[in-house]
Image (cartoon, rainbow, N blue to C red; front, side):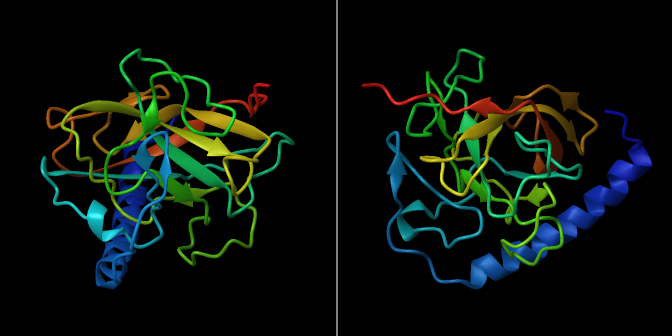
Amino acid sequence: MNMSMSTRRTRSVGWTLQAASCLLLIAMAAPAAVAEEAGGRPVLWDDRNIPESEMKPNPFNMLFYMYSTEPVLDSKGEPHQHGHVLQWIQDGGNGMQDAPNPDGSPGGDDSLALGNFNMITMHGLDGTQMKEGKSGKWYSARYFVPTIRDAVYYLRLWEGDDVRTAPYYQNSSEYQASTGDQGGGMIHISPATIQGPQEADWRFGPSTPRPAAKH
C-alpha cells in the first residue's frame, strides 16, 4: 500500500474529529446493564452503551482508533454490506492469527480484546450509523481503551451480522498507523508504542470459510 504522508494526515484529522463527536455522544448515554460473554470475555460493541460493570478508566493513557478507507471485498469480490461485524482480537502469545472456533469465537490461545469494546459494526464512513449500504468501509465508533498494559491485536471481519452463522471471515493483513508505523495483520499496543490518541487504517486478507461444527 502506498499512502503519502499528506494524505494520511488529512484522513487522520477527519477520522479523529469524527471519533471525538462519537465519544461525546457515547459518554452522554446511560450505561447498559450486563454484557454477554464469549469465551469467558465480555462482548462489548463499539456502537452500544458500555455495561456499568465494564466502565473503567484509561489506566495506561492509550487511545486507539481504527478504520478502513479502502473497500474491503467479500467472498464474491463485492464490497462488504453495512451491518457486517468485526471482532477486535487479542493474541494469546503465540504470535498467530488462530482460526476461529466453530461458534465464531476466537480460537487457539486468542480471545476478544480486554478493553472498552471488542466488536465493531460496519457502517461505512459517513457517520450515519445506518446498516443500509454496501461500501466495504468502516470505522470504530469510539477509541479503544485497553485495560491490559501490553498486548498484540488483530481484526477479524465476518461476512454477516452474527459471528455464529456468517459463512466467511477475513483476518486483517496490513495496517498504516498515524505514527508512520506500518505493519502486517497484527499490531502491538503498549505505552512504549502508543501515547495518547493514535489510529490505524486497516486492510484485510482473502475470505475463508468458517470452520465446520464438530460432531
